[in-house]
Length: 253
Image (tube, rainbow, N blue to C red; front, side):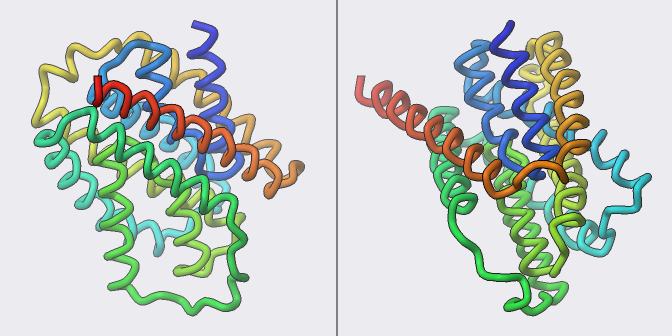
């Protein structure tokens, strides 16, 4: 139980502080700490991410920090991509989804550790490019159950030219729509698995995660973002390497 509580706090904090990072740990945490199967963990992660990001988005809505133009173009396409990817995930094994997730986690860590070019060097993207970007980001969410904030925040900064102060709450709003679309698709296609999930654990996880997210948002401006991002990146990278080693050991046994 302590592992679940600490994991939920970590996920909520990272979403509140960076708009990314922690939700990608949700799937391996549900598998290794709670005992979910890979597919159950991916669906459970969609629920956790959707609720935490949704609550955070509502609070940011009251503060007027969300860029609705970016939300519309990235979310509409993202919901389509998430729904399609969730449908496709029923045709592949949970083990393969887990390996894909580990690969995405390595990419996330690399992006969080790399030094990006200044925003001023980018031109504002057109609606079509934003739409295709949203389609791909939603696909990641629906396929492996991660919010994708590590991709959405850079996309908002570089394509929509949003400052970080607006990119993080806008990212949380997009994550909510993408995760909800993926979750709804899983419910429609695989209702039996949804009913068999350990909802008590998921609700505890989500409630603590919301608390962590609120704390993260309240202290975000007082903490060094780059140092935090690097710390989260190393945790994600270490987890991904462990997942890959475990997955390949199972594959060859």
